[in-house]
Image 1 (spheres, rainbow, N blue to C red):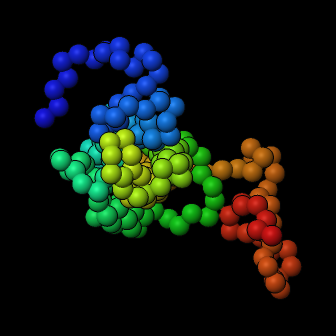
Image 2: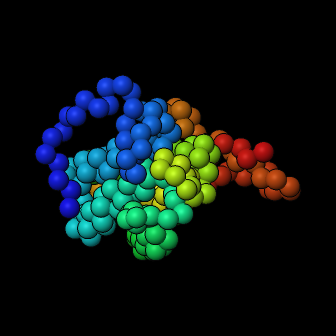
Length: 226
């Protein structure tokens, strides 16, 4: 049970903060950046949920994810140890499996992408697109923390690496949020498509490696892949 009796403490006025094992570190620590970004992602999803217009099953999925993201943050802020007095919250591989199952289930409802799409349409879709970008940043921050501290357990407070499953979870979550943003636009007929040059010109021709029919036009407006 969490019991917050006072919000400000002043102990962080020296530029440090506490990790999950009560050791202290700089507020510029990449671990702090990672779990702060996870917290921001949670808030962004909350805005999407409260913006209205999302299906009940989508809200149920997002609410589960919001609870997960608290655990992701707790995991990121607690260094891996060989032995714990009290085992901390850790991201589980099964949670990633759930995200992948969600991706497959919701993706079956939308048409295959043949164009880039705009973060637009319904308010819920636009907010989910925004949440997607925040989660992608959180994933990058998690990998940065992993590069700095590794994934090996430590033997003393404040020492130890990062659970790699946190970064993997955030990776799959960004995929799911992108799909759910598309789901949220089904009520208006689907995605808002990107128009090259703001609609001022046609999509560029996509060249394939090796022999190909002349002047073959791509199905989507991506840049040349050479």
